[in-house]
Picture 1 (cartoon, one colour):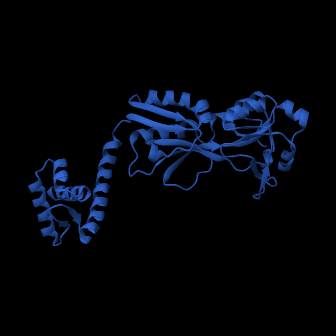
Picture 2 (cartoon, helix red, strand yellow):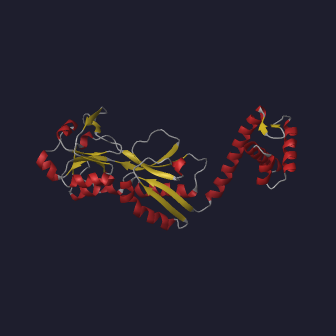
Picture 3 (tube, helix red, strand yellow):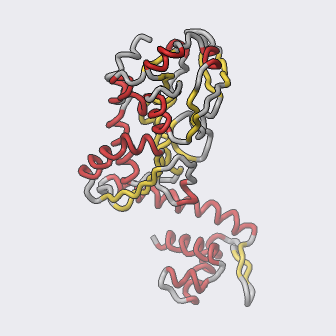
Amino acid sequence: MERLEDLRLFTLVAEARSFTRAAEKLNLSKSAASRRIAELEEQLGARLFHRTTRSISLTQVGQGFYQRISQILADLEDAERSVTDEHAAPRGVLKIAAPMSFGFRHLGGALCDFMSRYPEVEVDMELSDRFVDLVEEGYDLAVRIGRLKDSSLIARRICPARMVVCASPDYFKRRGRPGIPQDLTNHDCLIYTGSQRDEWTFRAKPGSNELVHIKVNGRIKANNGDVLRQAAAGGCGIVIMPTFIVGEDLTAGRLAPCLLDHMVEPSAVHCVYPANRHLSPKVRAFVDFMTGRFGPVPYWDESLTVLKGG
């Protein structure tokens, strides 16, 4: 244990570039800290620091030693924390970022159940369709939808996100129902400006892996899926939306699907979080809860018999 404390002292001196500041963190005197580092250097048979009356810096040997020792100490702290957290109840503030429509429709009730299960957790959630930098902005995790770009974040798949092209029965009665993706160029399309924009992707033929990208046009564009859902239900045009937004309207008959055989494979809803060395109990609890609540067949898809077999 004494040797371990000497190594901790060494890393503190290296990071602070000061015996005084490092000694204060360990409740030591400056002279005691300096003596212990000198003894460590004698044991190793190498000089770890350049010392002058005004400054202290690592030698080349000290730099390499610091990189190895700081990693070892981090591993040790992570192992200690994992044992402690294994038996610790989730607690503290959980800061979450989530998309507007998904959060509004599906996370309110989920949060109530989650917090009933974990009474020592507080939730601070931002609903926004903007991209959130979790590390820079201090979020514990985010709910994200779609195919994720490569990043330093860890992603846990929560449930599928199935897309469907749909419009009101009245719209199809007036304008006809598209039979192939190319027919969409002759229709009023409702365009989501967040990520999808005015190019929609389909299978070129049913069962084919070949994709076709269709440039669509329309007079209504919005950065919120629920606005476009309401416009579609009102007969304003055709929309492509995830079923977690339009599922209730499809079940109720306010919207009807088309081009089902041409839809690409579902993407997914994910929980993403920074790649910390150890996952905190509150984050792990929320991710596990979300996976169990929504699962491989989320509740908004269970009643969509209109899509089955299509």
